[in-house]
Image 1 (cartoon, rainbow, N blue to C red):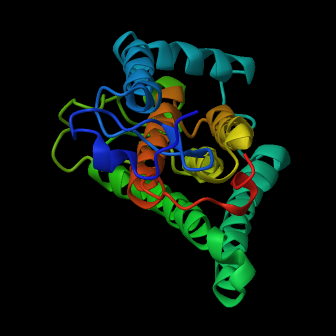
Image 2 (cartoon, rainbow, N blue to C red; image 1 turned 180 degrees about the vertical axis):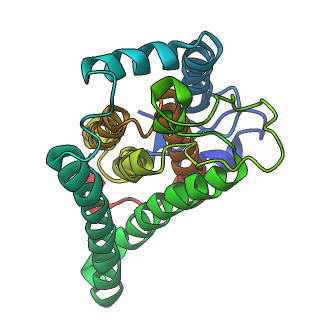
Length: 265
């Protein structure tokens, strides 16, 4: 097979750089219409748009919440339950915090040990990506004006429902429930997909599964408590995915050095 040390130096800028080269390391292509962007940007955006329109535009959000509310006897009976409140909500926050601190510790260790030099940038990426995702969701919660299901008259609360793009009466405070903050603590770990894409590509789907699994677990728990609609979780996932993708392109996609286990690939 023909091997080129620096493909970008011989290909025109308008031509996409191959997604893999230099020992098998995965590198994002330059073109917006590249296969990499089709799979990691445009297809996820298309799926997100379709689901978001269904959940928020066709009121599937309320349809699902109605069923969860009815199953609990027309009340959020599980709201303060041990499993949902103490284990998955409070415990989930602690798990996410300690997972992030573990990555921070590994990052610091990599600075001290030359043998871990190749791990420094990937670990720094994982550290920053998970932090950026949760901060971005927290900031968005301050900008949006959507309430939690348990705040709404429809589910025993005292407020009327106002959509994402609906004007609220002046002086009516919102609960800051959109996007879902707790679910973002799990979905932030979809960054593991890109972390492994740059280090051990064959394991990237396991990384994606961990991030999606944690987000779904935390998100469903909050929906059962009446804290969020499904669309709140969907938007949290989008923010986490886009922030992870953007940082990957900035920090990892342009790297051309071969990692230790890729030298023999």
